[in-house]
Image (cartoon, rainbow, N blue to C red; front, top):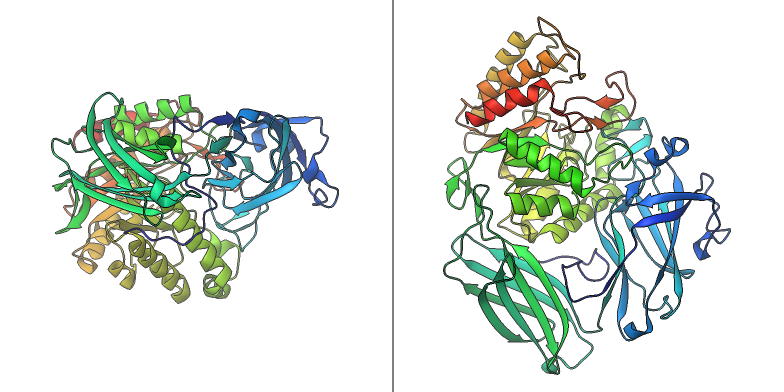
Length: 590
């Protein structure tokens, strides 16, 4: 059974055709607040501003004056709820904003949330007025600090190599539920037809008067495969069955089903939700990653949610192009480096059959550049840091737990595990994931090839390797020789563990060509990727290769970056580089 602490506010945001929704995407009033005077001046009750900003999108590239602004900003919009909804609970739903958000409706504080990449919802019943316009105000604090996850000090001093965008990055809406509603839906399946459903119901009616009707349909809601009725007892209901004639979900045949749950009280449907699910199993056995009992080799990318003007928001049309470019190249997987991605992102992974390593925001690649080396171990011991890292891992799993595409959780990226307290934190996070669900695969992406006893708490070893770029720069012969030697050492050290290379790559400036290949040219990037993959696919203990990165993306400014990190095999506006076609041929051969 799944177990969670109550980190999230209100019910999980479930798919529903039954619950009324009021979309709030569009143009909002916007005001920067560099001196944090807004609350004292009553901006939370409503404010005047000549500036507009579009939601969802990061604020930075919408106006050149806001581009490098990292601090506090205010958003305001209005919405109307008709009197026909009196008696229902209005929830304000934010799919992702931050870094830290505070929410008011009609001047009444609803709540707050820390972290840019996880949804949250707040009960607005005490604040809204039915039949009139309501004012929604959001205060976003995107300052960088060492006690935030991931940490930083300023726009160009961060522990992470992606741009610190601010704002409301994902959808916002008001959703209405009855006072009796389904609070959570958790699903476990396997490829042989197991269907285990755990439901949490919020009821203000006598529970004996309520029952649940659970149905399984095909992905078009046209054919019914299963139906079950259960009385609501104690607010938590667990149903487990073994179904026949179910097709498993896989990259080759991503079969999806709709699990619909109706809450019926007094012979009336008072709530109805559904989840898109797939029947699949994932495990590690005999040094293999097994999907539905068969070995699977992961081919794909580390990605980022980054696009011109919209920042951290990837419009649906961009996502569609991304996925078709990945399918065309022969990829079957990606890692959500270095934070959980949007629901739409994962919807397409479910639909098109991509295997996903879902990663938490605990990214520490450059933490050694922010604080003295002797302070790193102390930082990792800070109870506030540890608590936030754990909270964000839990929220991530809580939100995405029913996704067939999510086969593995990464609890960190490039944590400084050479320090004992940092190592113990990664161990604690990995064990915590297993405590939530023992069937979940766990990993973390390491830039250290020796992960020590942490091999005991992960199912898969994930390594980021850059011989030929950050070391052995320009000398691919030397880089490849070192790669082969180091990988053999890793395998001998951990003979029972499958290994994925979660990052390897070289920057290439589009249109820069060179014969012979030199660093930053498209030819060098293509040759780097070709020679790496030719080595990696011959190693029987290597079970996956993820090129860094799918697309160029914006980063803090640095002598190592030409505005963007240019390791993408496609440009920031999604045009293939020469390496894309080389990789397509290599993936076809594996």
